[in-house]
Image (cartoon, rainbow, N blue to C red; front, side, top):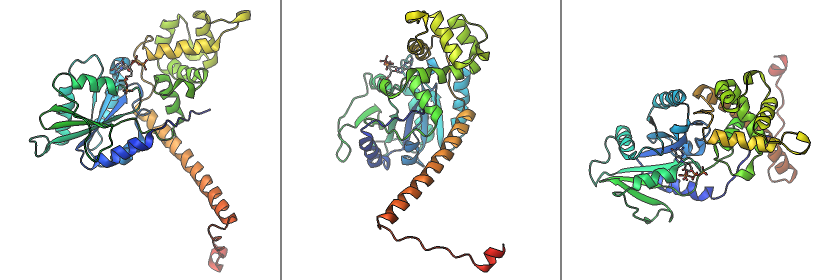
Amino acid sequence: MAIQWFPGHMHLTRKAIEERIREIDVVIELLDARLPGSSANPMLAQLTAGKPALKVLNKQDLADPARTQEWLAHFNALSGTRALGLDASMAAPAKALIDACFALAPHRGSSMAKPMRVLICGIPNVGKSTLINTLKGKRAAKTGDEAGVTKIEQRIVLQDAFYLFDTPGVLWPRIIVAKSGYNLAASGAIGKNAFDEEEVALELLDYLRQHYPAQVEARYKLQGVAGQTDEQLLEAIGRKRGALQSGGRINLQKAAEVVIHDFRAAVMGRMTLETPAEFAEWLAHGQKLDAERQVKKDAIELDRAIRFKKVPRPPRVQATDDEISD
Ligand code: G4P
């Protein structure tokens, strides 16, 4: 069953972004470098359409370096968009961010009359607080609330005439790509109670045994993982890691927790769960299913409205003689 996830406080964030966006010069979206497509927020793209965008592939220390390069090239090829990789081990990430913002909006930030105003957004657990704390460092100061802006927004001064606005909470629309739900759960972005670990581990193994078989084999001292089913592989991992229950049966829940933990901590190696081409395919499929669902939903709603006489029944269309002869 696909994962659905509806955290609260989205309206506040949406409103905060809507209020602020007109005066923003560059939007920084933090993405998880292990799932750059799935960790993006489509609603954010709508709200910030037309604004220069900086995609920051964070946690690159956990991601497959070759795939990070592939994603950076993909984003850098989009108009009005730049991308860079980052991780918490970088002591001074501000310079890279500042340079990228100037490249995107060269006419801003030269004086206090024309300051550079940057909005930073990202899904939960992507590392936004960690980055902001590093950026605050010594020089940057939290200046508190501004009139007309939602109270919890904070403004950080990165350098003279360069302001970074942080938005509270996150915007999280429906997950329309089933694979994205699993990848977000595997990465730790979705609350523990919102998904089934065994299901997520099986989906994760399905991808890893095809794309990173050598790493999986080395970690769990297994052979031929690419040819196994996901269930066989999860059982084999459980057996190797002593995840047993009474009667010598494999404790699949325990085995699933081991796999998810090992992926999150990158103990199997640095891995990325999607390429730009794969994600584009998943997205197209997800959007098609979503559109079909919407058509059905609209038809049901129209039917209900007609039955309760909220709207008149649409007139029957009479076929003309021409149409009949066609
Ligand atoms: P958020 O504000 O976007 O929600 O994320 P936050 O900074 O709290 O970071 C979430 C977790 O990710 C933290 O781990 C943090 O240490 C880790 N993290 C942030 N940036 C990086 C990075 O570049 N590389 C790696 N490897 N980890 C990073 P945590 O406190 O252990 O939380 P959790 O993982 O137990 O949720």
